[in-house]
Every structure is written in C-alpha cells, then in structure tokens.
Length: 169
Image (cartoon, rainbow, N blue to C red; front, side, top):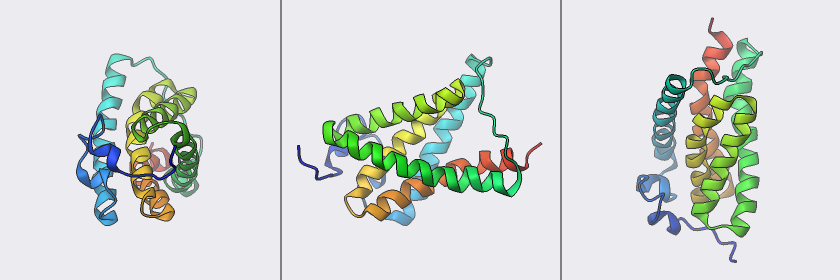
C-alpha cells in the first residue's frame, strides 16, 4: 500500500458532508475556527443528549485547579493527545483506508476517554473524528501543520471546560 496521504478520499464517501475547507489543505487560518465550531456544537449537543438520556453515567473529574489546571487541560493535554493521535493515525493508515482510519481513530479515542468516565467517551468521539481527519488532510502539506491544526482545534475545544474546571465553583 502506498504511504502517500491524499485528501482525495474525503471528497466522496461518508466524510464528504464536511465542508471542503476541512477536507483539503487550504487556508489554515480559517480551518481552525471552522473545525472548532464543527467540533464544539455537536459535542455540546451530544453532552446534553447523554446527560438527558443517561444522567447516571459518570463524568470526568479533574483534581487540578487554578492556572496549572487550566494549562494542563487546555494546552498540555491537547498537545500530548495530538502527538499520540498522529502516531496512531500514521500506523492505522498503513493498513486502512483514510476514511476507515478516521473512524477507527475516533472510536479508539472515545473508548479511551470512556475508561475514565463513560459519558465522556460518548461525547469526545465526534471532535476526534474531525481532528483525525484534519491530521490526515494537513499531513499532505506538512507534518508541522498536520500537528498544529488539530492541536489548535483541540485547545479551543478544551478551553471552556478547562476554564470551568480550573476556576469554576
């Protein structure tokens, strides 16, 4: 199988409903806020749905507070998880199509987060689907953009909850 990564598979198939901006490596400055909106709105909807349907499911707990807590959740975790995502997606891509790679990656991230709190895993698979796709799309242009763009989206995704965890009551 060729190791060349192209965005072409995302022009058709199950991921083709995403805007072209996300499926092709074009304007990095614009893809980050658009991808974040496409991550945060559905994941907030999923969080509401999960809490309404199954309020007994456990939620994640973070013992760290203040500035350290905020930096850990909004900066450190997204960077580390993006590096892990890149490694996983790169290995999966050796054996799977780009589309299947994105779905398997998202499911794996959902499962991994479910080990900490079951409700969390049901909510995070969607953002990780988008971030996995972004990594593959931007890897076509540059490894640095392929890492920076999903990490930036992830940081924005985590910023609100990180603020609440770090400084909320």
